Length: 158
Ligand SMILES: [Zn+2]
Image (tube, rainbow, N blue to C red):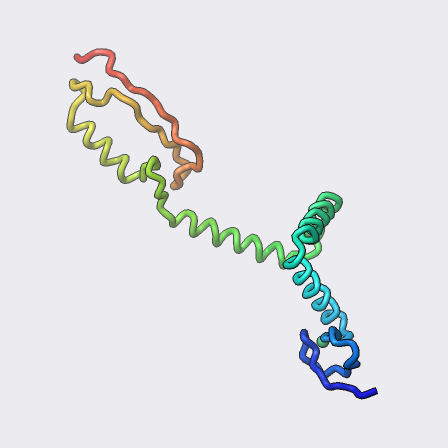
């Protein structure tokens, strides 16, 4: 039988495959066989939505049956946990640096200006009656919770 020289699709090593098996594109290494399976699965998922959903269901089921998998994985791989924690810290940093752009979220500086303006008007005008937003502060950060709406009304006009 005539042999054909081909390369493994995954590791690119030369493989002697039989020309009569045209789909034999991977060598026998464990990781290459895994790659072959992944490739096959990907193809299968693309052409068959039902199969894809079955896979997703199977994965979900597996996660439900192995709830401690990631916990144990993290315990057995402290490096992974450390890296993750560092990434989280990085995310927190950038979150803190970001200015909230929600239209109903008052930055602290704007609040200060509003308070100063109110002082200028004076308490004798009932101008400060109305509804105000109370935004709880946690340290330097605006707490990530909805602002409380309070209503202030002047009881006596002096
Ligand atoms: Zn290979």
